[in-house]
Image (cartoon, rainbow, N blue to C red):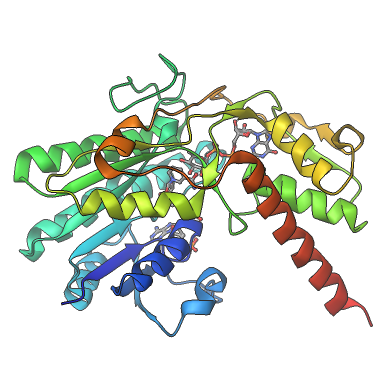
Length: 327
Ligand code: NDP
Ligand code: GDR
């Protein structure tokens, strides 16, 4: 019989790729969406007739209990979050409520449902923060550097605690940065590729960024959702680092992205201190050898290919917008 999955955060980058992936595997897919004054379904518009949407919010226990009753899922993927690190300093309690306590609410809903449900939690490489060793693996100590990372560390430990307290099947994927043409526009990769496209098409003249020297281990979101699913298919619940094992500076990303359209990044990129963070995570690089060994997972899309894919998608999108707005 086909399995049923409930995805929180289905309208986000990862939620959209994971939905496609699970539909291809024959799953019945439910997604939790929060109420908004206008629809926010653009990332899942192309599969809207194949997913079932339930109204709910990680800050509201009743809606989570209701969603579980409606969907009766075999698997839950908890992707919902206030996911922008920079915002977490301005909205620390909201971030803690959604990313931290929200996960406890979800696990309590699972526990009280009386059903055998496997749960995936979206943990983050941000938990490593000021890194104690490099590359980082499942045993590397956490040193969170933002309210976002503190909340994710709380939910990460909560996953372990529910495994140990109640014998529940809960896995955390400690995912390093993963990007795509569906990445939110405020994240640095997408901000750069969108900026490249707008500058190329003369819709902007400058791209203002923050710290250009920080290093991230950037992979492709389409590869990373496969790892989420693999974790829930194992005999026992465990945590896994998912990463490419390569890191690059923001400057390198910008240089490559501008080169893609024949422009010199130095002429267009300027540094604006407003994009610096109160505490920075200067470098991250993941060691995904456990995922390779146990799950048979490895990334398919490399750094250069990722930059090209994102620039091409934004170039096409901006060109389309210009075409539609011309008289
Ligand atoms: P996005 O920001 O693209 O998506 C976040 C999703 O969470 C959206 O669907 C959003 O809904 C939803 N959401 C936010 N608040 C609530 C709430 N209170 N109740 C219910 N839903 C809510 O994030 P990504 O897809 O990039 O990331 C998915 C998860 O993985 C997040 O938990 C993120 O923290 C984590 N993560 C991401 C990494 C990455 O590099 N992308 C790396 C490591 C971890 P709406 O559309 O209404 O805003
Ligand atoms: P991050 O992603 O904080 O790693 O979190 P983001 O793309 O926002 O920042 C990456 C690094 O780039 C530096 N940076 C800038 N960042 C933004 N957004 N805008 C800028 O102009 C800019 N200039 C430099 C940042 O300081 C930072 O060091 C992402 C999110 O998806 C989290 O939810 C997830 O948990 C982690 O990745 C892993």
